[in-house]
Amino acid sequence: MKRAKLTYEAVKMELREHKASAAVYLLLRTLVIIIMILQIFNRNFENVFLCVLTLILLIVPSFIQVQFKIELPTTLEIIILLFIFCAEILGEIQSFYTIYSFWDTVLHTLNGFLAAAIGFSLVDIMNNDDRLHFHLSPLFVAIVAFCFSMTIGACWEIVEFSVDNIMGHDMQKDTIIYTINSVALDPTNRNIVYSINDITSVVINGEDLGLGGYLDIGLIDTMEDLIVNFIGAFVFFNIWLYLYQI
Image 1 (cartoon, rainbow, N blue to C red):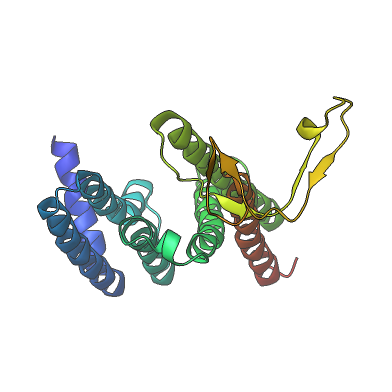
Image 2 (spheres, rainbow, N blue to C red):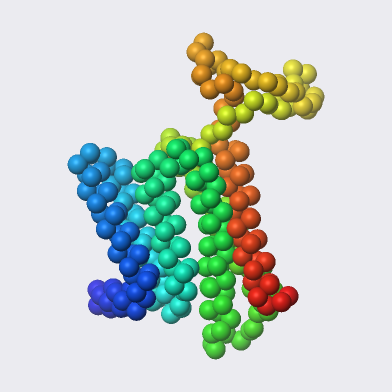
């Protein structure tokens, strides 16, 4: 209990020392609390849970800095706070994921960059720790940061797939497509690709879905997320190499 109190006080001190990030944190926390109160009145308890989760996530950057004794650049810390707000509050509760088709892509690209930066920070801590008897080259650190980012991206897609299949949600947003290429459609079962082109309607149980095409169940969304995560991580990788002139 005493340790938890000391950690809490250290986190508060960390916030006070970084005035810019603290101001952003307080603003976002206030907005989240207002939204949470509105969701309670609307009896939307799933969104209330998302608000509580967001409040917890907003304190994570300061908590990590205190626990691991690292200093995140103020700009990076603000970007992380805004990313959390944009993903949970604007994306989920305000439905930006469905209103703006680019929202998910932008956040996953940014996630790739941020995860690489966090991966670099973790490796850099070990690299500068006097208790550890090794020194990693800048190139190796950049590779580890890149791989860390891709691993986080892949793990998140596993989470989305699991939630969709176990809890019946739709975190893997579906995509309307107009062409199918599949060996499963080959009537001879000889592993020959069978194509259906120019799909304009799909009928299920005698009822037209009214989508104007075929509904892909999450695969395209997952692969696009991984690709843009790769782009974000690759950008960080190249910036790091440029700074060290490798």
